[in-house]
Amino acid sequence: MQELLRRLAFGLIVDTARQMTGVRLHPKARYSLYLYGPRWFIIRNLRVWWDGWSCVDCGRRYPLQVHHTSYRHKGKGGLPGMLWEFIDCKTLCDDCHAKEHRETR
Image (tube, rainbow, N blue to C red; front, side, top):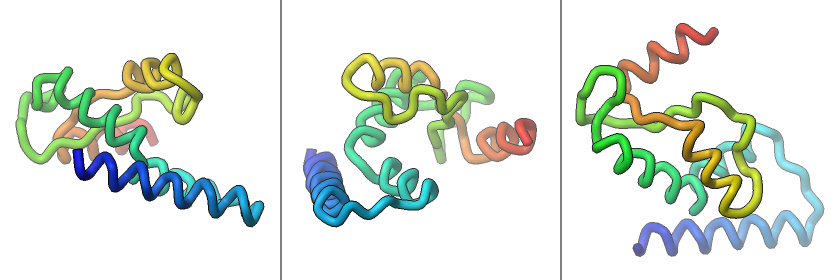
């Protein structure tokens, strides 16, 4: 809970600063902020729980990452957007995640 509150505060500070200054962030910077924000924290933890705390490809239990199978719903608003984003992800171990990225390039 403390981690979620920290991420919520961080997100609010960044959003407020962006709105006040009108600064547009580079896409990679926006993605980094997204990965450290509260929305991804919730989606990531729910996805790992949903997948049984193990890699869906090989069954390993550590270390785990959540892989976006599609980015078409990333950051879309509200609960429907979060639901689609949750569906567009899967839990992978480090090795399977690296393999997935090699195969998609």
